[in-house]
Length: 196
Image (tube, rainbow, N blue to C red; front, top):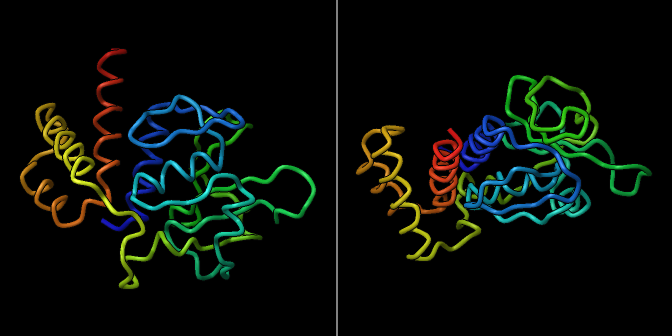
């Protein structure tokens, strides 16, 4: 699974969890947020894939590169406007087939929809695709973090959410960049069980 796919999967999990919009709300995996703003949502999703990205639409716009709309691929970012324009900016992540996922005020949460609001300023955050281009991962994973990931995989297997945990653990030992995704999924499940 690519880093972009992991980021999208995390976003969909947060949507399923009912994360709502709140201006200025931020979180980092493996904590499971109840609220995020648009740039905090993008940051959370990318961090879950092991990719650091600055917070805020201004910084995210300026740390990404412009691309043509025809070159969009899953994981690319889209912005409502340039940081120098007046008004409030907004950011979403491309999920494919003309659909964007974003955490927005008007719907008070995360939506996946075909929209043209991001078509004017599509951009690519290169570190998300670094592994595909043969570059080193942007985040070094500690043994402690890898252990958290392994524990999360074991928990998800015990709860019968995933099968073949040994295979997942073996993959994690080869490339642990998605350790936080496993932990976030386990924490989401624990939260659902404690609320249910």
